[in-house]
Length: 269
Image 1 (cartoon, helix red, strand yellow):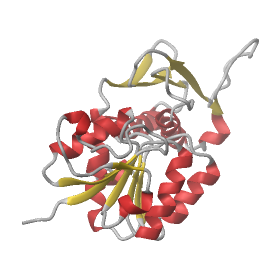
Image 2 (cartoon, rainbow, N blue to C red):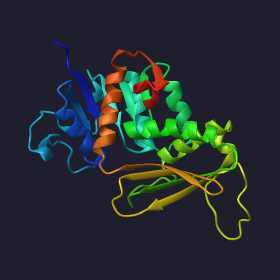
Image 3 (cartoon, rainbow, N blue to C red):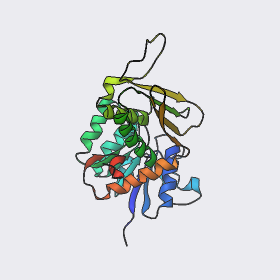
Image 4 (cartoon, rainbow, N blue to C red):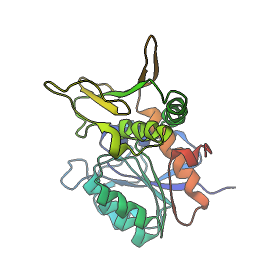
């Protein structure tokens, strides 16, 4: 009998934490090993399965080292400052890490890359299988539509999201820039206000919308003369991100170190 993968979930009382717990409980190949939440949470000490009407004998804790002891992988969709603490703890415990958190600075991304030299990490702004395919399609479209088409990335998320543009929107922008043979930093336009003048060719624009309970909508627009190509992905449930993240956790089972993304998980490169 193949042993179950021992998973620790971070941010268990959050929206994504809830979806990840459901995903673990529904997968016979996985077992909940640890459940982390922020210090001061009223749920600390409660059984992680209590909100689902089941007992797991795994209590919510803010003791990272204790939660990681004997674990195989930590799955994290929290905030950059929390992720960096988990990153350090995973290195010390030699535990694999799946990072779905967004909003990192360039320096923080370098820290993740450095940590991947000692532990295996899947780091992706969006764990959705559909979005992973979308990234590939956008790069290919940008190669074909590199002349005479203006590229705009439009995204919308719920009112509680704190970073903008979304990590997924930035990743889509990077894919478009790669298709054009450019670096996104050299061609991105993140805001427009007032008299901006005519749109400059070769730039990639971003538009950010926030409101309601939108899980995540992303559209990349290729606007030419007489036609417009739009490639869109809409997420209606966080379950899609949880499924992808847990698939990423399984992908890391036989890895000793290295930095991977969902393209690697889905064998798209």
